[in-house]
Image 1 (cartoon, one colour):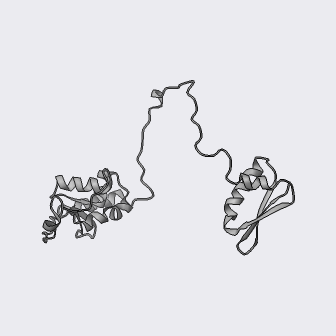
Image 2 (tube, one colour):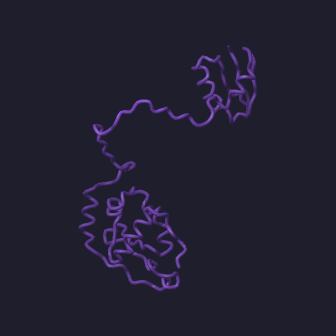
Length: 195
């Protein structure tokens, strides 16, 4: 049997299931996008392993557009799939091309749209707020505690500059002292307590 098995619910699994039940059908990129709520720019990448496993076949029509169809390995063992298969049937490609041009190019990420009936939402009282996961203090707190008074500083590796700068900005905004971070040499950063 074929060893490739796509994750349940994934685009490859949905397309393979479709072609298992409709082996004579063909789907273009626009049809896959609409039928399976897929992002057009990811289709080739997501279906690549299915093509390698001969579960799907990708060809081009007369207009040069990609068309997917059932591969020779759908419902067969690997040995059966190795036999050469006939070219997939061609259907009304002009209509599919016209539909693709009418939709225009896909731009950005196509996220699903959800509708929510606000009037059906229920306001509740007395529900305790969930606790925040993780530490309540900064991982840099021990470093700040070492700097007990103004004019003290500590040298650290330079790759920590970005993280230290973020921690210093947060601490300065919280009025927990005044700190500064700067590069002091190649590969070295220093943090100062100013007040």
